[in-house]
Amino acid sequence: MLSQVRDLDLQLLRLFVSVVECGGFSAAQGELGIGQSTISTQMAKLETRLGFRLCERGKAGFRLTPKGDEVLQATRKLFAAIETFKGEAQGMADKLLGELSIGLSEALAAQVLERVGAAIRHFRQRNQAVQIELISAMPAELERRLLQDQLHLAIGYFSGKQTALAFQPLFSEEQLLYCGRGHPLFSQQQIVKADLDSCDRVHHPYRFINADEPGQSNLSSARTEQVEGSLAFILSGAHIGHLPRHIATPWEARGLLRALLPEQFGFTVQFHLASHRGRQPSEAQRAFVEDLLGAFGQ
Image 1 (cartoon, rainbow, N blue to C red):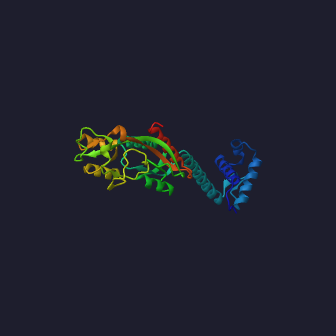
Image 2 (image 1 turned 90 degrees about the vertical axis):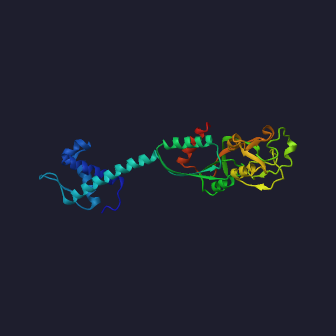
C-alpha cells in the first residue's frame, strides 16, 4: 500500500507512463534508454508499492488492467499539478509579495510628495502584488508606530534619539519665523532682534527644535504640534512662530504673512527615512527603499 509518495515513486510512475505511451516494455527501451529486463523490474517495484497489478504483459501483448488505467489517469493529473506548482513557485520566487505600511510626516512639500509618488510608480512597475498603506502622523506617533511594528517605514523629522530605529537622510526643509497681517511687526519697516523679545510665540514641541535654536522664547500662550495649528495662530496676528517655507509661501503671496529676520531666525530641518533596526526587512521593503532613495537622488 502506497502511504507516502517518494522521489523513487515519482521516477517509477514516470517510467510507467512512458511504457504506456510507447505501447509496451519492448517499445519503451529506446525511449527510456534501459533494457527490457530493467523496465520489467522497475514496473514490478511500482506494483509492489501500490499493492496491485498495473498491466498484463506476455504473449498476448501489453495492456493495462482497470486499476492500471485509473493509476495512469491519476498519474497524469499528478504530473500536471507538479508542473503547475513549479510554474507558480518560480513565479513567486521572482515576485514581491506582502504588505507595506509607510508613515508620512504631516504637511510635506509638493515636490516631496511627487518624489514619493515617483517611488511608488517605479515600485509598481516591478513584478509585485504588494498592498501599500500610507499613514500621515506627527513625528512622535510615527516613531511609536515603528517601535510597535505598526509601520515598516516612516518619512519625517525625528530626534534621532531612538537607538532602536535606523535613519537615512532624504531631504531638508527650510523653516522661517513669521508674523501675520495685523501683528505690530507686520508693517514695521525696520525690525531688529530686540523687537521679537516681547512677542507672544507659538510653542510647538517638535523633537527637532533644540533649546539653542533661534526664535525660542518662554513667552508663549499658544501651543500646537500641527503645522496647521501654527499657521492659524500666526494668521491671527496675535502670535509669531516658525513655519515650513513651502507652507508659508502662498500666504505671503496673498499679503497675509511676513518673514521676520530670515537670515537670523531661519533654520533647516533634516528629514529621514526611518525603520526598525531589529526587524528583518522583507524583499518588498528592501525594494521600496531602493526606489525611494532613487527618487530622492540618494
